[in-house]
Image 1 (cartoon, rainbow, N blue to C red):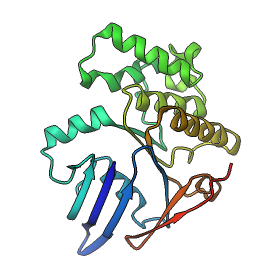
Image 2 (cartoon, rainbow, N blue to C red):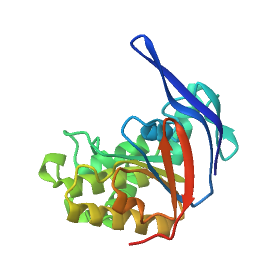
Image 3 (cartoon, one colour):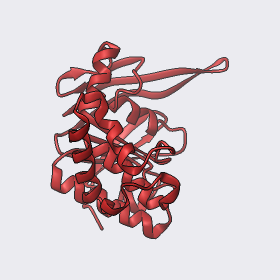
Length: 228
């Protein structure tokens, strides 16, 4: 699935140069599940952005199924993101003027599906995350946990090969956090997709079979017995 080799990312902050990633080598198998942890500013989100093709490294390669995301033309990279990668963020990133159904359908527009097909697929995936009866509600009519379920549905409606989640439970209380994590784990188990999540929550990190710890741009991997 993923093979990262020598991935380095530098950027300017004022007059200083910050090295967010420093020669990262990382392999993520097809259908694998990996959690990324580390201190604030340590490069966690930068690494996730590389995996999602949202940013390009200063050096190194990011292979997804043998294709280097670091060198793809922007038009092809946009297509890869639209077809193969689902994103879930801490802030939900829902369009406030669109219903739950319409928010989910937005992920299908770049794929050129007919409106009827978009409606059917969006309705099915909303039902699968427990929101079939809330599809006509706007985001501000939903709880935080429900909004995150809509965001998860939007990520999954295109049947991606990869799900990338950046602090997906960071804005939720403990009870809702556990509900969302249970949902994500079930979706991973049922669908066979590759699941990579950034979290500061050690309790959630312990639930994953592989843990990547990133400090000062360097990554170490630990296999662990996943706990619930």
